[in-house]
Length: 562
Image (cartoon, rainbow, N blue to C red):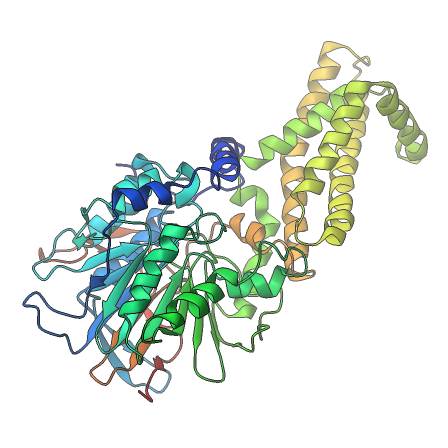
């Protein structure tokens, strides 16, 4: 099977293929909820007990791994999968202290296991194959894998996700014992891990609420919780609440924590750690009491920036403690948008087509006018646009395309920046058409003749390919680095496979949870077979420029007072 490349988000073909999935999911997702059928099919789903070994003896400690936002390009996804699959990783902190870590006996996938949209073939190519190659088999006791779905997993109504993760099958050497899209894991030393399914941003469904109420009744008073959700609601609520209070809020998390987990029969279930992906970077926020809110979406998807709108202190008092990549590196990477046309070689065909249609429908006879006659040319073009409905349609349509593309969370920014962006493309098309007409007439071709039209069409098309794509790159660069907008679009255009991350966690005999945030600055681009034929990655790096897994920051200890 061919190794996958990073998703080309700005490819017109990819946009056409992906748009129907998004449209159907938005229209039907909240009205046809498969979680309700899932609950009926598995009415007796209960807690997965990971606190005891195969001999039913209590475990004194446990290792867990957390990976979110994988299933994109081979290099990035396999780099994370192979690091997770190694039997042990030795890490060194900022003080030079060495920390030996073991592969988790539990692997949690934190959402968006596939990009851009799910299918059996795409899961196999982009997700299953990298993890099978990283760990094809294991000996007993086999590690277990659990997954919560993200929005990209939901784009087919959760069909492919359920087939892969809820069928009690295997992903490489990991067993998948879960039966629903949400789960509860009982861990040693009074810890729990809760995985939620919030669908496409909707509220928790009633069967899920009932399930977690039953789980809460099993929790002891001193029990603590690691809560996994597919979106970092604490970030979105902080950034966008003033623009859309109905969507960007923490009500799901707050309701689950305060009204369900903390109201069990024994009033246990205190959430100490919130984990999420969705944003493809690492950021950790900490409260004064030591609670953690961690975004760790570096499992393989293209990097998201860590600079942009200010999240140094959230509205609930949590403060930013670490980011990977650092903000200055993130800002520097954004400059790669100046070569947008190179990074996204097929996008230029879209702007070339739009520019060509705009010029073709206007068809103004301006080839006899020079650069000093710009005002006269503008008046002629304006009359043509107003006199021809098809020209008016294309000019207004092109303008609206770029206005609607603009950052949606701020109406003011959409109006101002979107209008300027749209006008810039119309001006570029206008000058290209004028220059093409002037050049063709200089070759001696008569206005409207076939050679004249061919030369003009070729010049506008080639110019629209280069200039149109470059204008969008400049717009994204300025939007993010100056106005702190379009963070996802600006980095989706770059398709950066590097700066990956995942979490390794240990619950020790004293009940302390230690979190090791692990980063890979540069993933390998070349691989070679590993000579040793034991359980572990089949391929190892053959790229001297790649970097080994390292600690992003010193290990975080939670619950030392217990």
